[in-house]
Length: 259
Ligand code: ADP
Ligand code: MG
Image 1 (cartoon, rainbow, N blue to C red):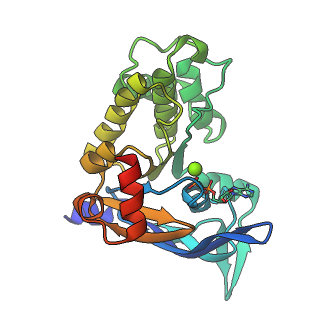
Image 2 (image 1 turned 90 degrees about the horizontal axis):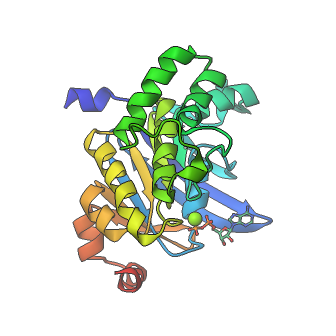
Image 3 (image 1 turned 135 degrees about the vertical axis):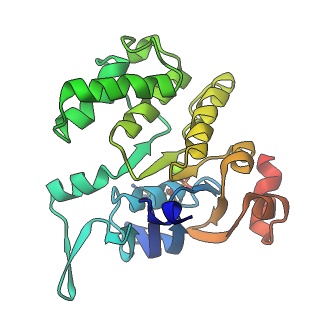
């Protein structure tokens, strides 16, 4: 258990509030994600799931509260009693500790699968290309795309593109992977292959926060399910508790709609 306790990837969200144009959409969110665990966030559209995920890696600046990764504030540096916002360069370096997988893949269309995976570690982390390329080939194999290194995104299915995006996120060796509805843009027959890759990562002990409507996935892969509604975490717990014995009316109503 010591090995688990000392691995990186502990995310702490404390009292996070966020407004857009004076309208508060996160009303004080608290969440702790332990290293090596999978947290699935469920909730209706507009409940603040994406905003929370984007706040975790400081793509959104929170108005109140804080986020910490392994005890280090995200987006800020402490100086005495004051907080200073990180400079862009420091922020970008810190952000590489989070891998982010979007609904819409966001691959570079003019780069091959391999080049998409190699790009950031070489250009942002300044790592040697040959070494990164060897790792990238192994990562593509790990997501079931060995042999497709030279394919361009347009030559790949949506499911394959999303698996390249997962390999690309892993190439930065992040402490935590954040997924925002990774299968929502996929044709139904392609959802399974992407979920299977994410489940394999879960078995390997990758720390992940996954926003999804895939209840079956939550049941199989989640250590913890968090249900959000209207900018708040309404309830959270092990999947069998939240999914099979929800305590709140809003959770019950949501599950009745998606199941
Ligand atoms: P979810 O991911 O659960 O669907 P979001 O986090 O995307 O929810 O959105 C939460 C609320 O914040 C919604 O009411 C949405 O309209 C609003 N919102 C999200 N992003 C912005 C933005 N950039 N500007 C203004 N309002 C936003
Ligand atoms: Mg969203």
